[in-house]
Length: 74
Ligand SMILES: [Zn+2]
Image 1 (cartoon, rainbow, N blue to C red):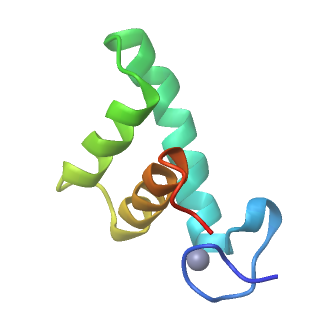
Image 2 (tube, rainbow, N blue to C red):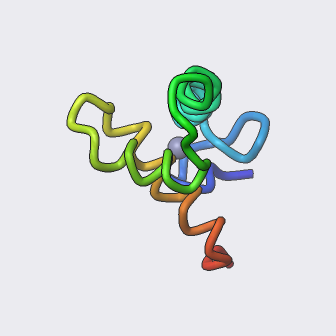
């Protein structure tokens, strides 16, 4: 099984170790965001992509999740 984003060997969830770590960070931070502001998941993903402080890995994961939300993943 390959990572859904890059083509490295995937761990659980279909992400490689680095993308999985970024994914888990995104999930963790969303809980904080939800409490601070009434942000929707999809809005949050867009913010991650725009945020210059977000690492490249997290941006790639956010981009992938947005595509998935929109049903564009094959
Ligand atoms: Zn990957």
